[in-house]
Image (cartoon, helix red, strand yellow):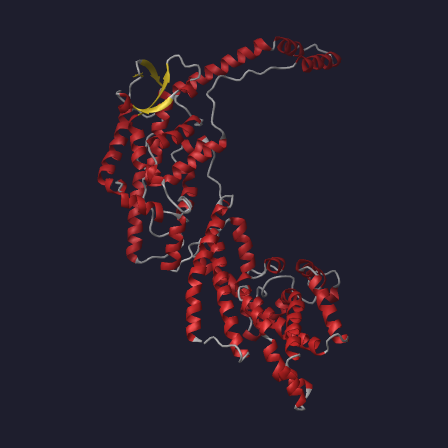
Length: 595
């Protein structure tokens, strides 16, 4: 027996690993944003205002490793062109431009207004007539009809096209998620990025492209460049914006990740290291400049970054071994497995900002009370009814028990729970039927009562939830017990026991029931996950803060860590339940042996 148990436990390990991988992938590839969170701000403003508007969401993703790829990380292959493309997308959407750009846009708007007036002369002539003070109501009504029939053609001001909002959000998220993998590229862009366009370009915002000033052989402040013998113009506005954004991203992407996540309590040494990292990150966050800063301020800021990079260059030096480690271990899945199997840590709840173990423990006590009580009640009621139905096969007792239980089985749980709360609780319109509390696990003032009074109060609150959880399983369990017992009753040793003169109930209870309970034991093993799964419907209707309601909240809030924690614990209980079922077979049936 011992060898069999050890062997089965060892076989469960790869099964559990496969379940872990499957659950993790399924949860992380579903659409939607975790935590119900959306990025702070939107579009150009949060890209332009030094990343502080997105800081809360960035920290949120960092805390839960949502800024990392799911299974494999190939970000070490990113080059400068990848970074430039995302920064250019964000820069094209910046609402606040430089002084020269704003003046050009004002000119465009003025020209558009003039063209609009020239295009709609009839409309504006009627507008002038409508402004006459001596106009009668009849004449005003006639002129307004003519003006509506005249139509109106609007001329938009000439302005650069902006990327689609979805493309902008993707660019902001990518740059943010790439983290310190692109710090060297960001520093290069901040120094010598230039955006060049043909001198005679019809659409300078789309005909140009980004390049490196050093690669073109020009200074970062040059206004023209020679490419294959053709003179190109440097777009100073877009160049300044991209360089500015590169420095803003450095203030965020260059920060080190704290070693203690939100809700974690570390040792004194870990807390000291955490404070040191936070202090350094705060210092880096101040190394930026405004979009309208002069050349001296920009040079001073870049000098700070150059000195810092020289001291920390080892963090960004690449090698084949480091790239392989990044690919395999700098992922959500690797971090999750490390925490789960090495630290026995399910992570921090996104919704509650507490360790998942603590969150599950708080909610589990309500569900386990309901589940265990319902399980015991189901077996105590269903098994005797199944035995009675088997002994009285095809008689009134058998048919009557089956009819009543299957009527209960056909009633949906939510319907029964709603009807019971409507007519048998304090919310009932019939005063003499207000027998039970409406909701909750216990009364609010129960903490001040004695232990016995608290137990009575909890029991009184649980009558209706237990009834709703129990009645649906009676039909299934009783039919299993009936079928298992009928198979045993027809056996030769039962006929031998009867031939010896034993009474019918002694034959049934002493000889038949024990061997006829194998189907019931199979079901008992598979019910272990119910102890943690809870009941979403019952807990929601009766406002019981158990595991079922916790899962409902976690799903709505995209609380990945809680969902994974509950599902993994359910998987473990399922595997253990199957093992216990196998072991119990040998205990009730001497013919079964695992030797």
